[in-house]
Length: 290
Ligand SMILES: Nc1nc2c(ncn2[C@@H]2O[C@H](COP(=O)(O)OP(=O)(O)O)[C@@H](O)[C@H]2O)c(=O)[nH]1
Ligand SMILES: [Mg+2]
Ligand SMILES: [Zn+2]
Image (cartoon, rainbow, N blue to C red; front, side):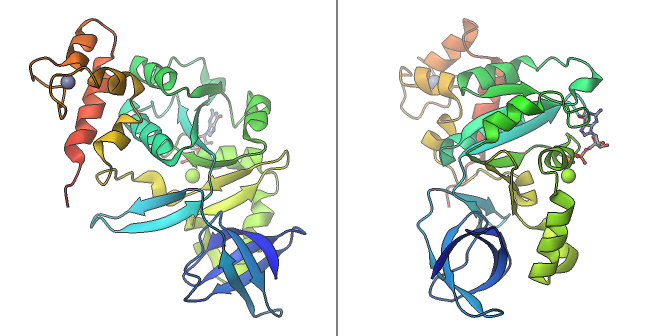
């Protein structure tokens, strides 16, 4: 039996990076369950018939929730969340708030990359700047086109498994291409080894980085449904609100027009950004109580 790391998974099959850097195609058995990108596994068998014997316990799991509220695991064992923004398309603070909640609930260290620095020094919207300060989110100004700032970012990614997220058009694909020099060859090798053809490009995939660490690209997380989260989980992405909510008169205060709301009064004193509070309340309302 040997150890390995799952690079990409399909229905009952997955590609495993072996300890010697090869890639093998393995089948999962019903009793071991389905492996996902980032799983640490034991595998064995003869060429062409490799199987996953064990999926090691997951430190955390990235889950996609569909419109019916069903959960599907996409990736496991992540350390960091790299939120990619750009001057164009302009950042959406509400979306970033959601990513920060995702990071906090999964126990991921959040990082923010402001891409396209070659187009000029873009100012972060105030609520976004506030969000990154409150959630200890390091900001990197980078350009996937010119390579500006990629050295410092590479150092930040080394030794960790980092999930890449961000709205369409901010330069995620360009950034992966810049950070993973053999990406094209890898994608082809993955397609060949999997026998799935171009289909693989839509699957959550793990890329080893030359300077250490791994990047996880997951097209599936671009729609972030957070309706299944508890109030406490949502609060974990809003440190400045959670701290003051303890002093509200009502335990289930929604920080609207309730009397004795400490959060509202903190906002009126300029201690909480109104857009952060709006974003928080929006997420509270989105919760489904099923
Ligand atoms: N000027 C500039 N354009 C960039 C940069 N990175 C990406 N782009 C462009 O932004 C567009 C979207 O990039 P893409 O990587 O496809 O974004 P994705 O949708 O997040 O994967 C493309 O036209 C890229 O050439 C950058 O650092 N500077
Ligand atoms: Mg892309
Ligand atoms: Zn309140």
